[in-house]
Length: 304
Ligand code: SF4
Ligand code: SF4
Ligand code: SF4
Image 1: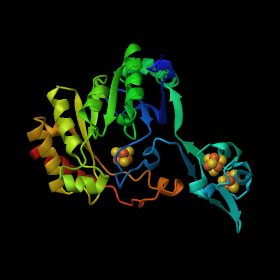
Image 2: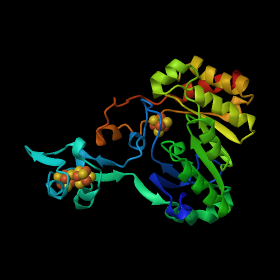
Image 3: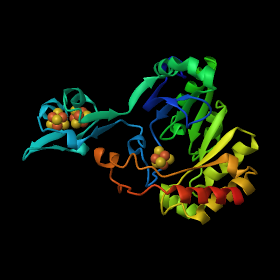
Image 4: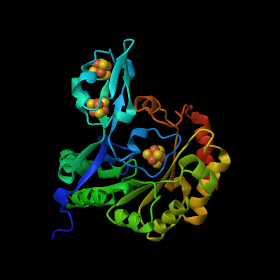
């Protein structure tokens, strides 16, 4: 009886594959974004990545109410009333039938099931670029820890091709899972969002106990790790919050925050997505921090 799936049978839920990235590990890289995340950060710029299941994205401003999707949908999730198209989310199964019949390109499915070979066929297109830049494959998300078997298979396939590997993780999983994945990564990008546990839970929906423990474990194992803090206005971008994160990196992990902690200014690129997927939570609307304030925060990191 066959118990384990071979690598060629393994399939993962892929959200996006982005080539030529220069921000997600050393050199020029291809980033494979997997679907699924255990956190529910109120500022999330990729809300369509949070669930493993695919999601229909609907750009209402493009819809001309032609009615083609009403006729095409096998689940009767669309209807037109008073010249406007209404999508009933509870009926939609994200089957994708309506996407190809919408000439206005108002619809798309976010999330595809792919095999390791299919993903690697895209990743391997840029082998020369990786060789010349010191780049390779980064597996990100959502949180790639949601699909540990598929993530490990991708990292192993990349190593077999001779490229280096990186993962971007939340660390919000038991150490066994974190270790299973990171053992196959040459470089680890690790998010530190907030040190205060209650406030972390309020902002992300989960405690940071496991996250901070896993950060310590990875440093103890002498892993090549780089911490990142997305700066969210009013949540963690006050001087004392950044000082607490930098203090954790310096005093608990024994690393220099000026070198190993990167502060990421808030970006609002994903705000319109909330309406496009009819997200149940609130839609975040914040302004990016000023360059002067970012300088002040960076100086604060260097001074802890
Ligand atoms: S097919 Fe596209 S343009 Fe036509 S009603 Fe549906 S969403 Fe609107
Ligand atoms: S994705 Fe499928 S179920 Fe959802 S509206 Fe389109 S055709 Fe209907
Ligand atoms: S960890 Fe990232 S993907 Fe997950 S909810 Fe937070 S911002 Fe979104």
